[in-house]
Picture 1 (cartoon, chains in turn cyan, brown):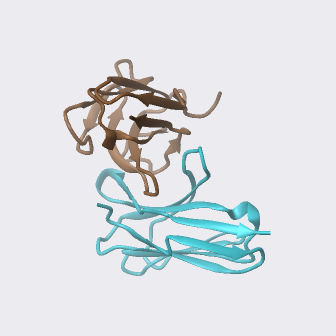
Picture 2: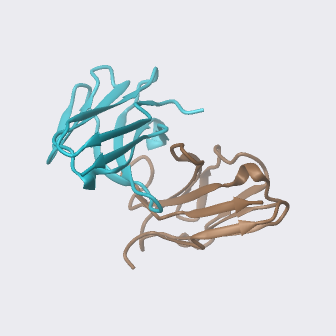
Length: 110
Length: 116
């Protein structure tokens, strides 16, 4: 069982399109992280958000932490084939113990 | 190398066989984590070490799973009498500080275990 639900599970889009991935929970987290994982590799940290309502930008990626610190979204503008991968959110609880969502598998077609 | 190294990358075991998976964390990192990632799922926490001390083993699914980090560096995850449901990718991550002080984890590429 996983505390965090991610949607959609799969997303296949054309290069240049915009997309949003959601991460939802009924639990409150002290922080929330987003990772990208490529086949045969471990997850790589993209961002950590800690304050309710916080918005962080990383080039074409925009991350938002919900006001109540229960949910988060990742928006990608003008997606590129290099964005293809599994996007994972992870919620931090006590002592920074992290709980991962099941992931969103993104495929960006050239 | 500078990253977290795991070996072997792939392991095929017959049901009932014992296996040992190795993790070489980034040098000097205090914290070490093991996760299990089933196909199509996110990683699930197994156990946590701060230096050589195993402070949290709440995620280990059964007493067939055992982990150690005797000198506070390399860690081994051992699975005894493997079963088909143990098939998964086992990820190791390390962090420069204690778990309550840092939220940055660097992951290895994982060991893919297939139990036949």
